[in-house]
Structures are given as structure tokens and as C-alpha cells.
Image (cartoon, rainbow, N blue to C red; front, side, top):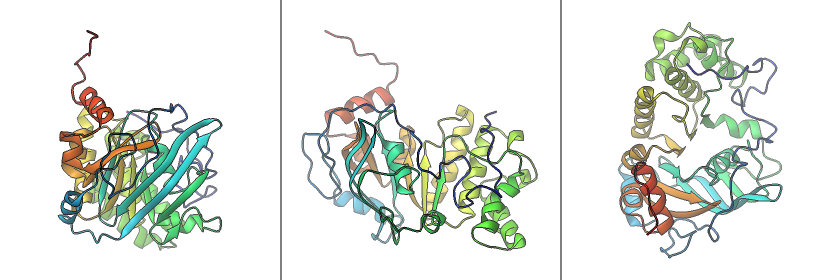
Length: 323
């Protein structure tokens, strides 16, 4: 069973931040990113081009997304986003829009900047330049009320980040009481409803260390949902799980998508991306190489770099040999 590192006392930590997150925004997640091929990133609605940074968004994207009935208004708006760690530029001019109710999956090789982009959206990382809007908040505004913004954005990490000394129920109520100022009774009712939603109401009195990795991740999802977020960010939520428990977590995420939750998901689960996402964005070397309707990008990618990546992911036993 996977367990998170010792977490801070919720009474003394920033209650608006998820346990294990870095409120100081100083984490160097994705610091191993390598500068790869690519020109500046492009946003939705631009025509395809045979160079990295090309966008392949089309009317098919809108049709696929409309199946869930999202409004088309922007829940996330990113323009010309740059992020560096010293001399290493991890994000190189990212443009991205996510509509309300849309599910967008970020795919690409490790170190391509996917997780850094996700963490910039709620200022767990501070970008060097560019603009980010999430809901009604301009995230890159120096006068932003960071706590208020984070209350509207739920995030699920790779390593669960539950408080190990609290029960499952307490993990799902502590931020409700401290941040949203709900009564303990109301917080308990909402937490139990969300634990039931992820199939873990019976585990409410147990500690995280008594649960499997997949169960801990489902608790992390219930905790995030208990804060009534407008947007859910998932950073490779199944990467630390036993293969047998991956499906349980993906089923919960699929249900959230069907319920209309706006979701931005970093994942290597291509079948989930193909079947659940409205749109897939392929990143490499800190730029958006290709994006479009999920089934089109995964089933018929237009860019050679996308084709190479998907070939290796979907056919891992195939080895290219030089002629």
C-alpha cells in the first residue's frame, strides 16, 4: 500500500491548499524536463501546420464537447505562458482554453511540461510571464486572492497527499470547516455523500494507511469534491496505483465527466483520454504540438512527433530497429 509522507497539522498549515502541496510555489516538479523540438505554442481554432505548436482544434471538438452540454464559456484561459527553472525553460509560450464542462487530457512524454502547466493554474508554480484566467480569477494578477481562487479549484495529485493522522472522514471535512466555515455537521454530511459517491462511505472511520493506494486516491477525489470546486485538476492520478485499482479511479473520473465537471487531466491512460476526453492536447518540449478531438488525435495524429509518441505508448513491445 502506498502512503504519503508525513503531512503538516491542518490547524497550522494553509487550509486552502491541499496537504502536500507547496503554497510557496517553489516546487521544481518537472525540473527534469528537457528542451525538445518545437516552435511557439498555439491555441484552439488555428489551422494545422507541419510544425510543433500547431493546433488541430476544429468544429468536431465543439461537437464532441457539446455532447456533455458545456456552455462554451472559458473556465481556463492561458496565453503565452512561460515557466523556467534557472536556465531550463519548461513552458515555452503555452496557449490553452478549456470551456466550462469540458474534459481536456494533457498527454506527452515525461518532462514535457504537463504537470508544470497544471500547477501553474492554481499557483503551486509561479510562471515567469503570460496570463492565466481560471473562472472569474486572473491568476497572474499580483493582487490575486490566492486562497479564494484555490477554493474553486480542486486538485488530485499522484501521491494522494492525505493527512495520515486523520481519519478518512476528517480528511474530507477539515478544509470545509476551516476554509468554507461550514458547521461540523454540514461538513460531515457533504463528506459522507462524496465518500459514498466514490464507493468508500464504509471506510469513513479508517486512517489512510489502512487503505489501498486506489482507495486513498478515491478519498483524495472525495476530499476535493467536498469543497464544491468549479474545476478539477488531475495530475497523473493513476500513475502510483496498482494496475488492478486503476480502473476504480478512472471509473470515478468518468462519472465526474458525465456529470458535467470541468476537468483538466494529465494522464498516460490513452484509453481513458480517447473515450472520456472532449479534447486531447499533446505536449512535448514545453509546447503544444498538436490538439484536437480526442479520438482524432489518438486515432489519427497529424504530427510526426505525436505519431511517434502514441506508437510507443500504445505498442510498448514494438522496438524500432535501424535499417
